[in-house]
Image 1 (tube, rainbow, N blue to C red):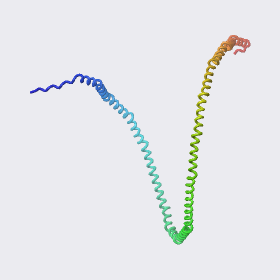
Image 2: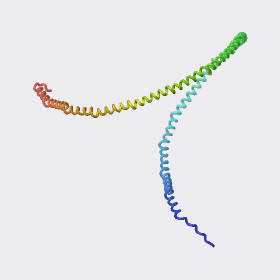
Image 3: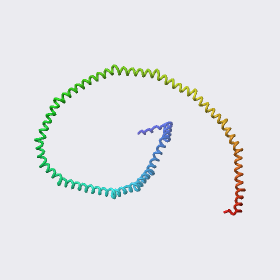
Image 4: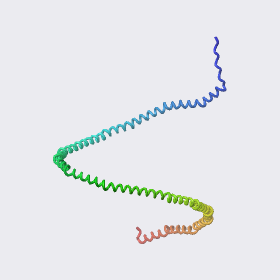
Amino acid sequence: MTTPQPAPETPAWITWPIRAVALIVVFPFRLLWELAVLVQRFVLVPVVRALGWLLRTFLLAPLLWLLRQFLQWVLLPIWHALRWTAAALVTGVAWVLRMMLRYLLRPIAMAIMWVLVPVGRVLYRWVLSPVGRGLVWLLTAFYDWVLSPIGHALVWAFRMSGVAIEWTVRASYRWIIRPLGIGIAVAAVAFYRWVLRPLGLGFAWTVVAFYRWVLRPIGLAVTWASRMIYRYLLRPIGLAAAFAWRYTFGALFHGLAVTGRWMRDEIFRPAGNVVRTALGLRR
């Protein structure tokens, strides 16, 4: 019996790159997957269950209890009161209608049936019917011999006037309005192309050139001159004036103020106290 030949081994230059790729690519994803499974099993599921228990215990259950109490002690009494009021109102209205039907409407209907109906029949047969037939004959004759001829004449006149107006409008459009509109459009296009557009371009160019070559240089010159005047004339003059004021009149005024305060505190006030004491005026 022949022994089976062992399978040829894979060359190392193939297996080692495959193992390296598996270690670098597959192994981290596998670790992340296992970590996600552990986090889901031991962190997310307990946290979700705890949150569900907290929501059910401290939010849903109190809300359901409050809703049940509100339905039981507020809405149901209001519903019963409204139902009782509606039932009483419907009963009262039905009783009033029944009394009106029995003691008011039924007698009126009986009176109409036994008195007014025969009278109405007599009036209809001997008065209203002949008068109505006469009016119908008069209206029919008036329509046949007056209104119908006048209507046909008016229709013919309106039709002729419509034809005349249509012909006038078509002729006016073809020979007056259309040529006039074309002329106005051509004149407007030519006026825009040869007058307004050159004037607009010239005005825009003039404005841009005036700004670029006149206003902007003048503005820059005025800005530079103002800056130079402030930096080399006004600011030194102001600093010199402040320095002169501080060390001349300012120092003089400060010395006078200090001297006045000293004379008030050291001479005039003690002298005034002595005089008041001597005169017996000291409080």
